Structure formats: structure tokens, C-alpha cells
Image 1 (spheres, one colour):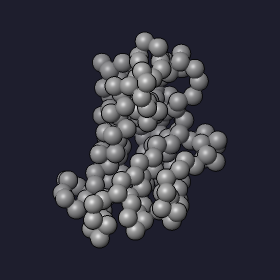
Image 2: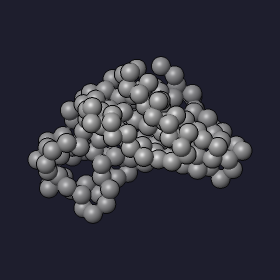
Image 3: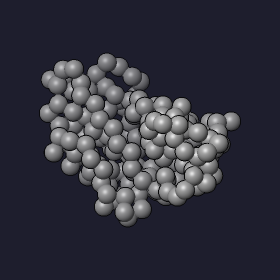
Length: 165
């Protein structure tokens, strides 16, 4: 496991621990699937979900950003943060920031996006694989999860997305 991958797993598990749900384990096949899709997104220079993978039972979170200077495309941080690299935890933090939109009493959104956050902490999810790829001017990240989260009605959400402890 690379330093970037370790950062992905640690960041997810730090947020999951806040909610009292079990830690994720790294899954090399999910990582390979995520890399294939990240490469596809870089090839088409556009972000879209992989519904074939989702239909096969994998959860998915996507992220992308466009650096100010495409000639200085950052790399994956394999250790401490520096100006020329991106840490995985930066993307995971962005997904988790949707937590403020989640209503724990109803298991529904208060009006904003919640599905990235809920997938990060979904209690029944046990495995993670994550990868990145770059186009000429964008950085794409794909996270794949098993068991897929965000399934079911509001009761399923209340059961699988507990309040922070």
C-alpha cells in the first residue's frame, strides 16, 4: 500500500471512528476498479459515475479539481503535505463536510448533498479502494466501497449513519 493509499484508508477510518462504526479494510480489487474508472474520467476529461460498477454492488464517491496552473499538476502525497502534492484526506474531508446537511433524526438531507458523507461512514460498508488520474488540466479521484452504502429508506440511513460520539 502506498503512502497515498494509507492516507485514504486512515482518513476514512478517522471519520468512521467518530461515528462508532467499524474501520474499513483496503481492497486491492476495488482499488484496481477505481483506477480503471479514474483513467477513463481523465481520458474523457469529465466526471460521471460508473453505473455499471454501482449496479454490481460497489459504492462510489468521486472528486475532481482543476489546479490554477495546469503546467504544475500536483502529484499524490506519499508522506507529509507539501505544495506540489495532494493528500487523500483532503478529498475525504470534502466528502465528510456534507455531514452538516444530514438530519440524524429523519435519516434524510436537510436540503444539501449528503451521499458522499453517508458513504464514508456507512456502517455496513467494510472495504475501500481508491485511485486517482489526471487529464491535461484536471485531477480525478475515485473511491469504491463494498458493501455499497446509501441503500434503502430513511430507516436504513438512520441505522447506518449514527451520530458522532
